[in-house]
Amino acid sequence: MELQFTKMHGLGNDFVVFNAIDHPLELSPEQIRQLADRHFGIGCDQVLLVEAPRDQETDFYYRIYNADGGEVEQCGNGARCFARYVHDKGLTDKATIPVGTARGPITLELEENDLVRVNMGTPQFDPASLPFTTESTADSYMLEVGSDRVEIGAVSMGNPHAVLLVGDTDTADVEHLGPLIESHPAFPNRVNAGFMQVVDRSRIRLRVYERGSGETLACGTGACAAVAHGIRQGLLDRCVTAELRGGELVICWDQEDEPVWMSGPATSVFEGTITIEDEL
Image 1 (cartoon, helix red, strand yellow):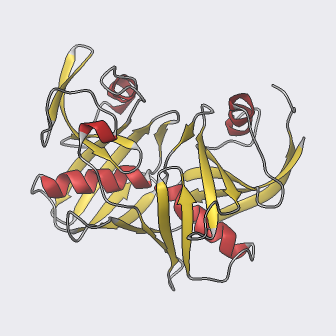
Image 2 (spheres, rainbow, N blue to C red):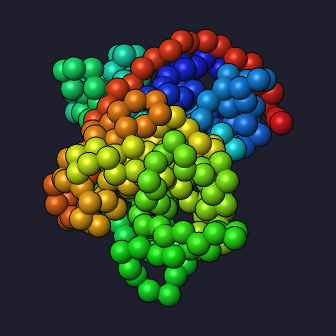
Image 3 (cartoon, rainbow, N blue to C red):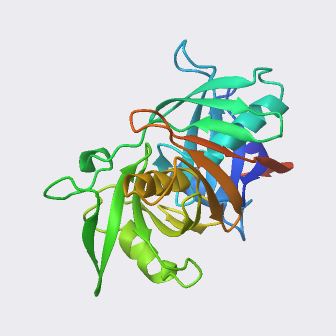
């Protein structure tokens, strides 16, 4: 099977994007893993499928697959790349684009400075929304991770996040704690693990070990979850710059019953054609 693709990234969180509007595309987990492989495939953190809308309230639908082949609900950097892709390909001329996802509709806005602003939805802190197995709802939780005991915030941005406060992201033990938290039995569907350093009330530094992909250079939903947790803890103002290893995002959350908005860049890298086996 021969497929045309576009390689994109949002702050180094990279994607392989396919137009599946006119020709619906179903990819197996094995095919996703082949495409994502950085030695034998194209290489990416996630694969995005651009699809026709599934209802009258949206203009498109998009699906997100992690590098391990699993389909996930939401991806903030992917959403920005999605908006840039459909605009650059002439699939829409709108500056505001309503899009359907597995977690529900989101709104993408193309800004004049080449940034993309995304309505990421309202954060959820009910453990069942992640899901997260715990005896009661709290602002933070103690989690036994191997021989360590860490304090986390549990946040759903349509996908699950565990947020840890650290003194310095450069020395945070992401490689060791990340995979242990990701696969912790308290998170039946696994979880994204964010390591947040509060620089001041308007700036954080963040590293994220993503479910199914490992540590990435940036994670949009992870930045939203971290800022939301920091605001609820009284550590951050309502509009915060999140500094990730791939660059910066601006995250704003005006009120607790309102959505989080994220602004950041989206970049096309190259286009190409790849042949993958029909059955793997």
